[in-house]
Length: 240
Image (cartoon, rainbow, N blue to C red; front, side):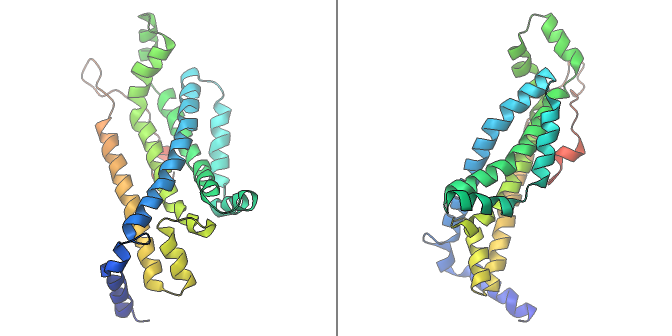
């Protein structure tokens, strides 16, 4: 197939009203994709945020962060999904479980790094003024670590959006259906269009989180200088 002809087919696919209506249309598939992502992120955040806050605040059990980070990088998403499908059958459960396990490491690591890196002098000053440990965490550590924590959520969300295309393999919905069905039916234009839609969604979510990170930039100190929180490139860049 010549390149001009292929591009014309892609344009035709995107401009075909059939692909933008009904339960198989782009809006419906995008909503399914976001529902899978939201479910996985809600569970992952519910687990990783409290654990990361506790370890970062108490400066204990750091080995757990290292272990989870190493395991998270080694997990094969497709193999994990197939394992859960074999154990649980087709459906949403194995998909969400796989995406949850994928999302936990970056959230946990960045939450720990953000909280742990807050200036110890600021924490001691707060404690000296009678602030409780819960108050230190909620009033000082979390506001200063918010940008780093959001970076972890951003990384995890983008990874889940990209990997949630595998949901179609397990009988689920989402934008991955266009990729899987296009591959199965030899429809290269549909396959390519599905990939473009997934990339566009990931970029849109990534941009939203970047905007949120700017909005929660750490407050300035009493001298007017920005409050410093370590933000290693390793854990804040995409795919890190």
